[in-house]
Amino acid sequence: MLVWFCRMKQYSLTLSAFLFFVLVVGLSWAGTLSSYIQLVLMFVGVNIMMSSSLNLVNGYMGEFSCGHAGFMAVGAYAASLVTVWCFTAESVFGPNLLPPAWAVVLFPFILLFGGVIAALAGLLVAIPSFRTRGDYLAIITLAVNYIVKSAIENIQPIGGARGFMGMARVVNGMKEVADIPWMMIWTWAFVFLTVLLIKRFVSSTYGKGIIAIREDEIAAEIMGVNTRRAKMVAFMLSSGLAGLAGGLFAHILGYINPGSFGIMKSTEALVMVYLGGMGSLSGSVLSAVLFTLLLEILRPLQLYKWVVVPFILILLMLFRTEGLLGHRELTDVFPILKRIFGSREEVHAAF
Amino acid sequence: MPLFEVRALTHFFGGLRAVSDFNLTFDGGELTGLIGPNGAGKTTVFNLVCGVYHPTHGEVRIDGRSLGRLYPHQVTAMGIARTFQNIRLWPEMTVLDNIRVCHNYKLGYGFLDTIFQTSRYHTAEKGIGRRAREVLEIMGLRDHAEELAKNLPYGLQRKVEIARALILRPKLLLLDEPSAGMNLGEKEALIGLIRWIRKEFNLTIWLIEHEMRVVMNLCERIQVLDFGQTIAEGTPEEIQGNPRVVEAYLGKEVG
Image 1 (cartoon, each protein chain N blue to C red):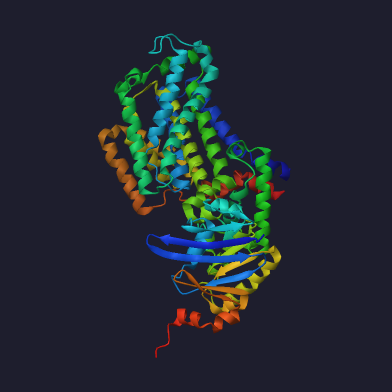
Image 2 (cartoon, each protein chain N blue to C red):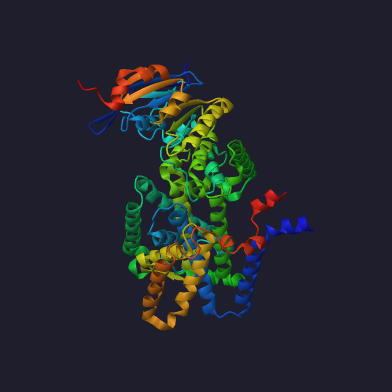
């Protein structure tokens, strides 16, 4: 019995995540959740992906990237262009390439494609940034954010500054096959994928190399870590996941314009990382949830929202510099969670 | 073929000649010291050997292979490990992780294995974990495996640094002032420890040291650097009596 319980314990986190997933999708499908609540829930998901992926570079690796929205834009446009090109009729690309119903199967792969393109963009940034650290990398990524935004604004065939639309028709095409909340399903599926990927990466000896880079880069290099490759991999993973988030964001809204991927969006991602605690994955998830909900709750305040939210941040930085969780995970702060959601290593160690 | 060879190593920082025409040969199993006054270029020699700097002239060879312009992690993979003058552990990581991360030199799996957690990943990680625990056990650090490195007392941090170097399975171990900041008792223990790991791991050890008691006690041969030049070389007794060494440390007698 005890053995069985211990064996089940390692799946309790997966199981809770799955229950949450079923609950959210089920309630959306049944119509219990209003479309506004559904939208907020999906934005929570996108923000979790943004903050946890940025945490990989800013928290775990200790660099300072502040152009995360640039990679989100790359992923958003790459995925949207492909879906609109393939599945909608009266777009800039002419008739649809494939039957709209195929979107049901191909959509996740197109999202992944968007992520890959964003990862390649990340690689382009990572290579010249090898020689710089700290402030300099911050400036480079800031510049990249502007470059991406201005480039898209000036490419007229994809709408330029007016933005790009047609993704709503792609989603409608999926709805015609089966009337279920598709975007809710894909969003949360990719959220779990993102968190799982980052968790696996940072708990491997390979991924711990990037934490060593944060702690002491020269020591890491001399003690056998290929710091160039590690930085490159971490940066690509981070920007690729941001690209995935971008693709989802585009299809949730059905419309994107370069303005929504400006420095403001990057700042939001930064805020969520520092709010949750650098190098804490559960902190990033928690802070993305809190931050998104907070912004929605304060919506009645209208413009004053942007007074209240920064003020809360100032208070946080004054009284809790390390963020809500610091370097720790939720399981370290509340040991009871560890008993419920025991980690796999512990279970292995127990036998 | 010698295990390790440094030939005519010369390095400039801008116009300053930090190391000039440095030569050294190890056949394997030696325990050699490198001493000299502050700023003599000792740590620079270590940094040149490790690939942190690339020498202006000269060559470093291990097992007959030239290190050329390799990156430090590649030099490490060829069998040279070191510790640092000022402890450079990764403070916010546990002692066990400090040791594990060093295994990046020979990982046995790639990025995709990590995210798909293939059987190759599990096998490799298990091996790394086992070896890390073995090294901790040998160094008497088993009880501290889960502690953050920054929370350990100074002497133990030094031990973790040595443990970290040992998991790299080096042929040559460089110790940069291992006894810095230690009290008398800790220094005695350190001498014992260095002798023991040398025998246990069949290592060649090359150390920089300021503390004469440690150097004279441990080393079979000593080289003395001053202003980047090798001014003396020999057994501890020869070095102690060498007037040039005395002059470099204490200055010339007046009159």
